Length: 418
Image (cartoon, rainbow, N blue to C red; front, side, top):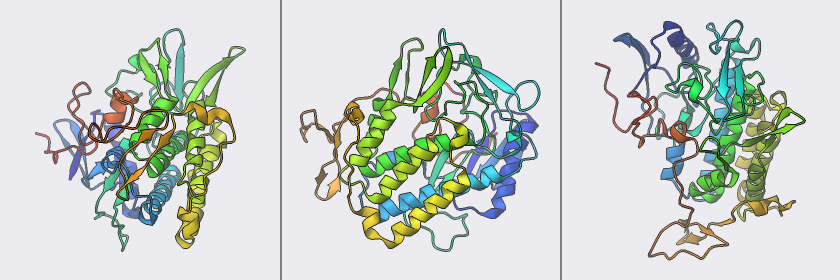
């Protein structure tokens, strides 16, 4: 069992999270975390869930260089499809307690500092959207991996385990609201997977989650083709140093000002990296299709033009059906030649195989590593770009400045509150 203690002692916040979890629990969706029980102790609300073996980021790290074979690619596609299906269920759910942010009237609003001299961004919920389920914090740390799924009604569990969406009851904004341990007035730059709506001062909707999901899918495909060290290389590729905040920015978009009007573009490093994945020597037709869907329907600046979760699920089911029946579509390498020079802006990676397994990474423009000195040749990186938000909830992460309570699985089985 995993016990989650809510940060807020407000009963309304407890109802926000428990209502949707309780309502969706009987559906036994294979890719949504199941609420087992709730209780109140010491004026704090607690929720009990099945104990996860790891979150998605930890899973990637523990399986640094997956075999590029039928089992791995099909499992990954099934998980992507299942996560889209789970998100569809969340988005279609009509809540009884509105998922708003603090503020006067309507869905509320929250001002967020954008950095020195950049003014404020504003988080507001699009009118009417507060009555529908929304996650608001999709990231690898909130996708949990279970080696065995004991709560699912599926008669044939996958031997590689299952991924489940967690922490979806609050509809919060990446820890920016008052329920976070972070003071909103001190929040400066956006978390990695946040869409551009906040900095563009536009109201948000369920499409907020679709952008975040696109970010995860792009990292998932990176893991399939190049292994987990390449995910950090990708962060470096799209990273921009924010000199006024002293915090590196690895968002998937860039804000520009044209004639005094703020606009956003998908970051050039993201497009360059995607072209490199298309050009990867192992990239199959399936992976090309996944990359195309991600870039054309998920990582779209205009939120109203992003795919709905329901349509995304339909598309991924179609790709899955073809992949299961056509081995060439699934695995046969058909790398694309880069169509622009932008791929030159991303560090070139080669993932040679040794003894039939991928276990090293070498940059083409660097000297090959001496095997006696190191197993991997990747850039030495400091803390991940998403700071606490990227680490919080990872089983190996021990919080020191974010409070005494973590939410998703900790290294030891949690004890009940005393």
